[in-house]
Length: 192
Image (tube, rainbow, N blue to C red):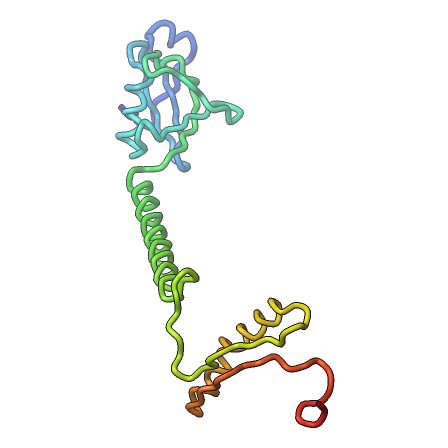
């Protein structure tokens, strides 16, 4: 349907006489000239554009003067189109490349998500009971009659599970029978 680039543009009077109108569509800097009759509908015109440019009808965006997007029904006559148009759209190959790159990107994200799931599985869940290490503090004891016994028990429990302490116990193969709270006043081993 493309017309020889050297053909002349019809004037308004010749359009009325012959019923044929010339439409020039610019796509990526290249002009495509078409002679459009009243019988040709917009859908047929779009298919001709698809053959020449590779842009599928569904992807075609036609702009008239002033950059205004043209909206037509597929059954309307193509002779309603203005004489100069700009076509925007991507070819099927370009769309396929974008889809493939998105799939590659999504696969990378899936792999990262899988790795994160595996890392979470390696961590010991809070709800499960952990296996006690061989070298450890056997018991924890707080001082009776002092305030904040629960807070003291939390601190001693946290200390008994501290990896640094457990590493020293393991290295020396020590099992400590009791981890106890000390009295707040006085000096250890000197005062009573």
